Image (cartoon, rainbow, N blue to C red; front, side, top):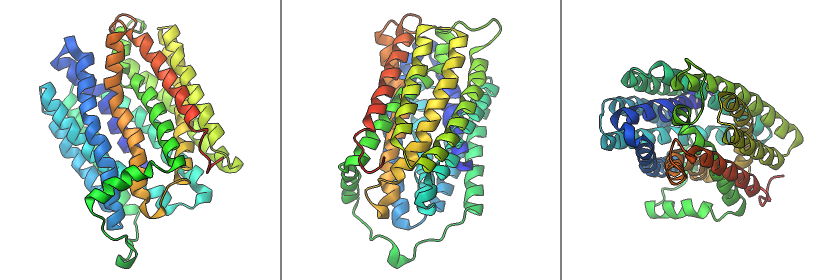
Length: 394
């Protein structure tokens, strides 16, 4: 939970506040397109490094060294990101940041299937899932607090990840697999073929599609939340957009934490996963419709609460579901790394897709953001439908 909290604190603090502010300072007139460009290019690094790092930790028989290495490297990446002043250099620096954070994330994600029995996966996933609402709140608060000093904000976020990595590897000790028990080294070409092979597994493929669609819908809106508050929502007098982000984050986090715990525990008790996932995706879709129909501050508060309920439950229960349908127990980290592409890729690609929707549908001050909410809702509904074909889990 601590590692996940630090990870999402950095992702939300950077992607939700500091990076949009930094790009706005560099090129205010083209901020929507430039944010989409930076985020879209960095998606390549996010999706590539996650399964590769997972496969490397599988072959090494260890998770902790990769968690520690990725966490410590985050400080350097954030220092570089805070020191650049052109869109090109911001893109390069954030690509590096995505690379090291996905090394950290790939190994951390493997801890639950490595160390938790099947009967407790829902509760364990719920506990780990609490890192998202807690991290989202901390990220938004830290981002708003350092809106006037972006470079220091980046360093604080990187340091938090590094500290969490040191604490995790110090207190969550692991027993390395003996040499004879480790999988034999596999040539890189065959590893890439295996990544694609995991998607040929029927249940795994549909879990991948469902998560990708819902995460894409969620982050299409989230990635542009600051710009939405600046250009689309009528805020109360005296409330700045950066401060509004910091208000919405706790509302979203409380709802997400509650649904994460309730969803994880109930799915264990009832031994059912798919109904919870479908319901949570529908709730997320409804949440996205609210500010599309009413571009007001009150509607954004309702959106934050409903979206937290839907997304929190989805991530907790979906993590448990996925741990039960992995194609290969011996390659858990690799396969989870492939699945994380459905989370990391859409999460970073979403601003690029959102910039296209906003630009094509009337611009930031026209109907662009209304269309963006509608697209996000449609993606969430499709994500709910994608879990129906899964056969190995009820």
